[in-house]
Length: 208
Image (cartoon, rainbow, N blue to C red):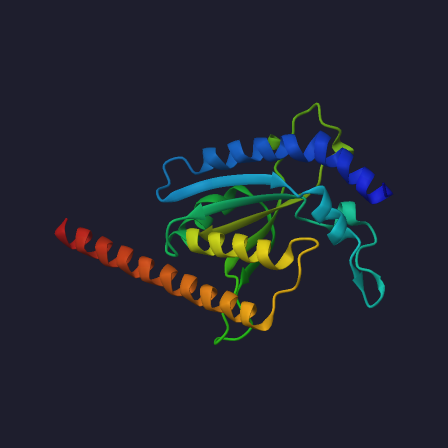
């Protein structure tokens, strides 16, 4: 077992797992009364994925000098909403309670391409979610929060499983086209459901 793997395994078991559970409770409390939330989930980054990321090379040199401190998504949180319209509303409800380090709206590079969409934030980990019994040396400074719709979440999970699973074979050209096709369908479905929701809300407001 490498030093990186052993050090992270200790952190994963002793700190990240219990903190992720407390963070889920914290987020759910913040979102009480907020409509159209499908789920809130948190998780520590898996040991295999952390080691793979920590040992990445850039220009034939290690990308990270100190991965235990530099990798910011050792704890990840997701808030899954029903509609596109809900994403900024949920962000406005949650973000004031955190100190944001980085905000990123992820979209494909070109307008005619389809792929992953989502809002990602690197936030300071609040002290309230860290139990006093946890060794502070094992606690990361940050966590990653993703806010996305059901369609964005479903597509990204399937795409990651198909394309990035360790040991899996690279997708062939036609398979990549099929993946792009499903992404376009998910993109369109997201917008169609959002338009239907807005149309319904408009009718209800005018009726009221």
